[in-house]
Length: 411
Image 1 (cartoon, rainbow, N blue to C red):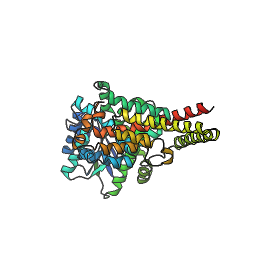
Image 2 (cartoon, rainbow, N blue to C red; image 1 turned 90 degrees about the horizontal axis):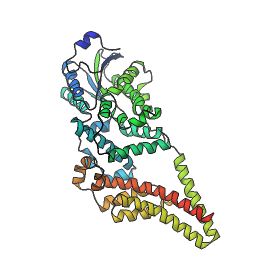
Image 3 (cartoon, helix red, strand yellow; image 1 turned 120 degrees about the vertical axis):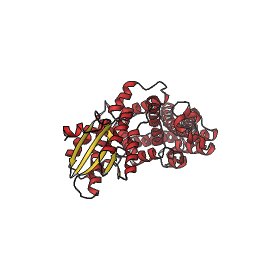
Image 4 (tube, rainbow, N blue to C red; image 1 turned 135 degrees about the horizontal axis):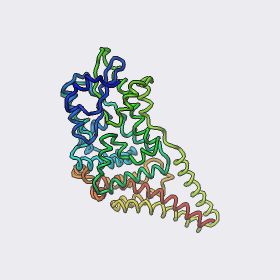
């Protein structure tokens, strides 16, 4: 239930007018403050609540990785590019960097670093010796669940939206900044798609409301059973209504609920089967061509090498890759069916990282460089990730093009 009127009027000036709800459950009072991610008043409201009220813990809408990023903004400089590529995380790192360009533009335009109110809550908890509860789901899991929740064509829309944010040079519209003051950073980054897609909205907002409500209950159950415990909960205003409702009504075992929502959904198998089926058909056609005529078979095999290798190399060339990386892409793409594991884009990207090892300055200037589209070609770290993406796309285009050409030549 909402705070009694007497409590609202007793709030400090910086908190009055801010969205605050008080929820009591299982002997715990949760003071839930809805914040704006680009608002100085939200940061001041967090500081004022911590100064004027007594709390036994502070909970924030952050996961471990985002909290670590706030505590140590320079941590990404220790990134091991070879390890990122080998583990298949290059796409996720690239997506995170693209989102960071959106945050950087917001900070430059508004004068407020997105998430400043979360940093104030963490600093306030540390200064008072209070336990800090990180209650949000890992951002990587959220992005994976969002990606896998939508259909094939919607994914192209999401990629297009991310790429457009890189090439966009104009200021972010004031209406978008106002949305952030009432909503969620991830939702705002994908606002056009989230508003028209229930699965996407659920992944970005609904599931996280349920996850955070369960995390609060889970953390509360782990602490001592003293009555009248009080927890300050700092979340984006877009989560306030949903989280408070679930905090009152959720009956699931909190640990089980957290575990359920923390697991990325399994990858759809049909794209892999479709790709494997295409390659099998193409190689069956090549075998049939050799059966008919050795010269015809040689031409079909050569077409496979030239199309797949050529488009992969073209992707590396567009990325501004080193000649060694371009050659690696050309060699790796045609033998992809016989070389399971690291894709051609990964091999070319590792060759790029070896041929042009990122310098300290590339990590130092990475976040600033990628705000402008040209920085993706100038910065060695960004260019390596761009090389991975474009070679991977080129390989796929090459496989389909080779298949079409070979079948046309045979039938």
